[in-house]
Structures are given as C-alpha cells and as structure tokens.
Image (cartoon, rainbow, N blue to C red; front, top):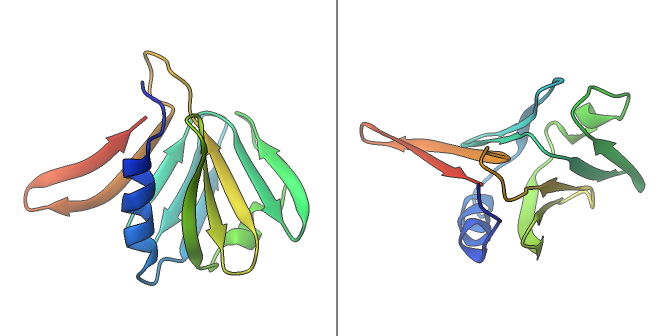
Length: 124
C-alpha cells in the first residue's frame, strides 16, 4: 500500500490526549494486533519494542518476547521515525515501532471507531 505520513501521527496523537491504554496484544503467525481503548492496529510487517530497556522484534511468528508487559500501559505519543517506521511511546518509557512497506498488500491497518454507519480505517 503506502508509507506512513504526518496525518496518521497527528490522528494518533489526538487519540492519545484521551486515556488510551493497551487493552490487549494478539500475536499470530499472520499478524500482530495491538488493541487500545478506542482503536486497534493490525500489523503484518515487523514490530519492534523496547520493554524495560530491552529490545524485541516480532517478525511474522510468535516469540517469547514479553509483549504482554505492554498491556494496561498508557500511550503518550506517536512519532514518525521515517516514512516506513512509526513509533508509539508509553508513559512507562517503553515503546513500539511499527513497520510498513510499499506493496500491493496492506502492511498496517488502523481501525478507528465507526462514524455513523461508516467504518473508519487508515490502511498503509
């Protein structure tokens, strides 16, 4: 699909002004999903994390990283590290970075609350 842009960063930071903590993390061989209070992010490319000062990577397969330690953490801000890498920082100091690539297939899907009868998604 397409690379990340400042618009998605601004949108995420608007959500993060409200209480947005991680409700759940889902790891699978086909994707990584992080569910916040009001929206979710589905990732099909790599996801990097810094948890308690240690680095971890999800790359299309479940692994033994302490991904559950992100649950109940409150998101503080989003930042565009590059057009292909978006980071989300948590109040604890932990962070995740989500990768996207230009491709005919979606790499990352942001699922936001519906507006009326319309589903709201941003696809990268």
